[in-house]
Image (cartoon, rainbow, N blue to C red; front, side, top):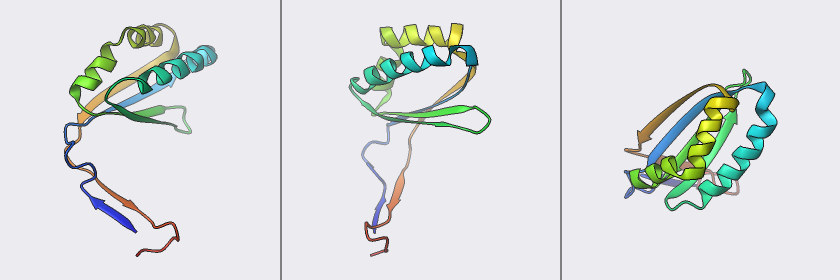
Length: 119
């Protein structure tokens, strides 16, 4: 068993963006192409830590994006190709979206051992 009370404790300035959206069905194929390209670009940005995306049964999409700090987040927010993709999102891809930007103040983690037992 691994337990880390305070995962990455030194980085309480981590910025977490929660992006909730619904796609317009007539542009899903084009959205997928743009999203793949923009995701690859995000991975090259200094301070980008990761993204996880989920789709609910009702079609709502949720992405959780992590950046090392506010400066890294802001650099991504303002990156030229990302700005163009944001504009396309408003014009074509999304029927609605909501963005929440949060600062991590605490984190804990638990991971079961490889043998499935608590040590």
